[in-house]
Image (cartoon, rainbow, N blue to C red; front, side, top):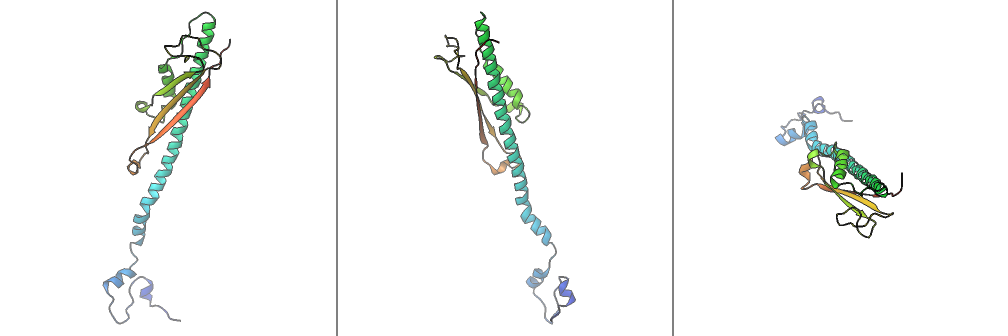
Length: 183
């Protein structure tokens, strides 16, 4: 069994009677290998970590957007139902305003979505020959009416936005029935 000289095991070139070239000595030198490996692997590792964080943030914002739209549609449904009950009692039929629905939506999505970037909601009423809560509606609502609230939000990734030229368009929509009856 051939034994290697002690110097060779420590990463130094063995003296075998002739001089090694610079390339030969460089290939045997193991100092700095860890730093080179880290420099090659660190960008991939950090992009993966930030990608996972952004994926979680995307899911959270999508959930909050859906939740805000559901709460807004529920508010519009309950307010329209209460307005119909008031009309049956001799009062006037006044639908909730879009600004009131927008306010409910903004309060539901304000923590993850900045107050300056809260998207506008679109509200559509349906279920009657004429739309129920539009200025041109001349007939009162009939049972089976509904309200649909929808919103769109342009989400952009955090910390790795340089990898994307634009954000992702998130959409949410919720439809709630307007329940007509006496309370």
